[in-house]
Image (cartoon, rainbow, N blue to C red):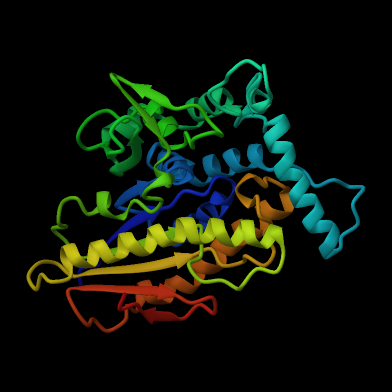
Length: 344
């Protein structure tokens, strides 16, 4: 029996990306390496760390990146839910004002450029440290060799066009990954050739359509690891409102991408079967409003383990796929780990 190709679609979400790493750990440990990856923002970083290393190095390089990113918890805060949330908020604010070693540092004047009579600046933070980190952790010669095709997305600032950089069609460089992580205001845009790019999260945070820019020639199981849930509770505080608004902003983009894929391929009866399983990071009650900049150790460990658990629940669906309904079947994993057919 022919096994399907495994494609990974990795959304953006900055500090939430430890969820991707935890999920990949389970796939790696079960010899389920992806055949193709598309990534946006931190998803592009994760994709680069996987596709830009040999199989035996991939998990170690992901760990190296996230160990560098994680901030040790503040020992003077007692371990209570209230103190834990306070520590996460403080971690996010610290990242904005002090940066994270190996990832980014404050720009000068940066955030203070909003004050009257201050010098102008392009962003709050500079991502030069991440350039150095990714140069050390990714083998770009290997990435260009196409062992695992990698698609990295960005947005052309001048035209608003969504652009996909595909390692199968040319060299994928550090600049392409940096362009994908250049979220406006937080980070400076990246110029490649005569075009300047922003993070694609402002328009298409789940790079699903670029992954299917050409119809697959073999049966495909596409695993979408999304860092923002589409469903959530009514907020009761300003912090919860910020968190929920962020989820809706990015989660709605994922729903739209899935609907567009269904429109594109759902009507076709001929061709290899395609199964899409959408898995969203679901532990939101423990997150704070500025969660995408919360690099606290507690949050890092929680997200990594959440990714592991989500992927462990997926193993059964990979080994015993659900009964096909159409050529393109879209499923979502519920918070309880069940697969629910998604008619969209």
